[in-house]
Length: 95
Image (cartoon, rainbow, N blue to C red; front, side, top):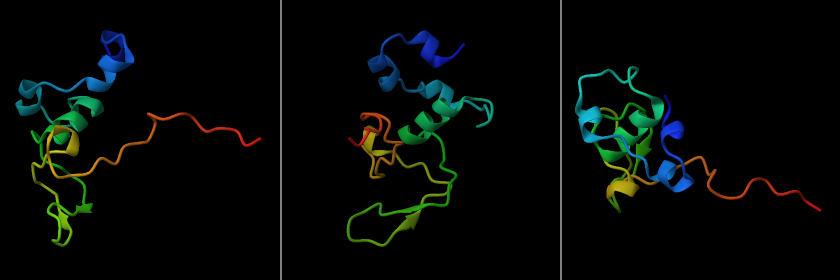
């Protein structure tokens, strides 16, 4: 069963977050779904795995976040949101 089958409205789907018990469990990253894993990382409950560097504090140089538990902006953390941008309208046709 998928998350979008359980949640009916778009608002419920956007606000869905993995539970703390799931994030803190001993299940491997590949054993939980991609959406749940991303939610866990954004909540700061699982370590991040990419090599991208971010400015964590203003005025300081960029730092690597590999193997660190750092919250995303949505959950009160310093990391910016780099989403897919799919919340807006689709591509408009030039007329």
